[in-house]
Length: 210
Image 1: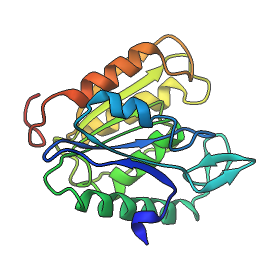
Image 2 (image 1 turned 180 degrees about the vertical axis):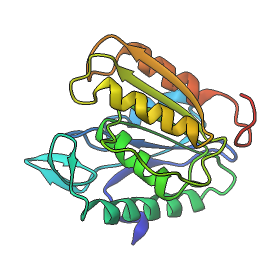
Image 3 (image 1 turned 120 degrees about the vertical axis):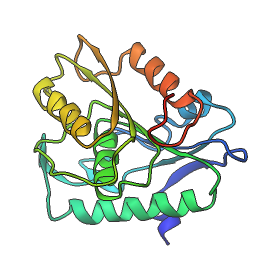
C-alpha cells in the first residue's frame, strides 16, 4: 500500500496547519529530523520516512554506484514510489499546505519528486542537494517557494553544481532563497534556523509574497 511504502514516523496536523515531509540523509532514518520538524510548528503534521535502499548498512532513498553516480534504472521507480507515498498522506489532510525539507540524499529525492510531480509541494527546503546534471525545463514550478542551503567548501556537493541548481530553479519561475556557509557537508546552526523560519512563515497561495 502506498501509504505504508516506507517505514515512517507520522504526526497529524491540526486543521489547516501545514503537513511537513522530512527526508533524512544517507545513513539516517525517520527519526533524524522528526523531532526537529515537530518543533518547527507544533500545530503542523509531520511525515518522516526511512529510505528503503540499504547501502552497506546505510539507509538511502535510491541506489548509486558512487558519489554523485546515480543508478538511472533504479531512480525513476524510487521517485514514483515516493510520489505516491506523499500523495496518499497529503490526501488525508486536504486543508493542509504541503511542505518538505531534506538533507543530502533526502534533499535529492525531494528534488527529483518535485521535478516529476511539480504540484505536490507548496514549499520546500533543500539542504546540500547534489543533482549532477542539468535538468530540463519543468512546467508547474512557477511560484514554488524554495530554500536552498549549502556549504561553500562542501566536498560532496560542489558549489558550482549547487549554483547551477539555484539557477535552474530560478529559470523555472520558482521563488528561491539561499543560505550559504563557509563549511562543508555538515548542517550549520544557521541552516536549522533558516529552515525553521522558512517553514514557519504564514502560508500564502503559491507565488504570493510571504
